[in-house]
Amino acid sequence: MSYTGVLSGRTGLFTEFFRDTIVECGFELAIGEEGSFNISTEENSLSVIAVSAVEDLREIKPEGVRPFIIYSPEALPQEAVQALKDNGLLGVVTPETSPEDVAFLLNRALFYDKMLKRNPRVPVNLPVILTSANKVINSFASLLSRDGMFIVTLNPLEVNALCSLRFSLPDGGKDFSTGARVLYRVAINKELNIIANPRDPFKRMVSHPGMAVFFMDMSKDDRDEIDRYIETIL
Image 1 (cartoon, rainbow, N blue to C red):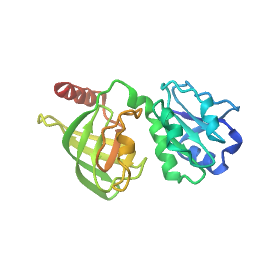
Image 2: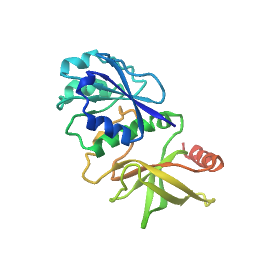
Image 3: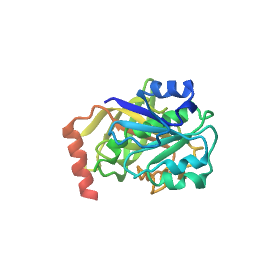
Image 4: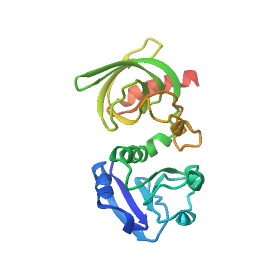
């Protein structure tokens, strides 16, 4: 699936380095109309709106339907962006924001549509064996859906890292084996409350370090079996 980063607002503020970072994260790049603060409604797009001052924020009219990011030459006051965070704003990026943090926000948008589908996530306690290159992690999953799981670990892999997973459901059924990609990570020194906010578009229920992984090649039959298990505990 191809995703497009649509740059709009004060487009002259975007640095070449920031544009390159978007492309390196797997997004195609499109330049919107200069001075337009509209949020793209296309399913596979992410609006990145550049503002030159707090006053520009009043021009952004979100409806909470699509995610977007704000790009600003300098940090914006929390109180100035809070209402936007309640309506789809994923975060604010400045020229000083690290590529890793930019990638974190972009990946949240990359799987936004998947995460918002009616695939319930339930709290679990499932032993998981994760393998990535020569690294093996024996841990447990605290959240499960047909699309992925959150694995608790003090040493999460980097965002976009590929891995393989083995786990089974508590009912003693078959063993599951699948490839996966790290969607986001929560390091032990990250402020956990920024992703546990119930008003966040993903409504994440994370309160411990670890990583969310997205199943890459799990069969439909296996996903359906996970769905049936989830239905028994909802």
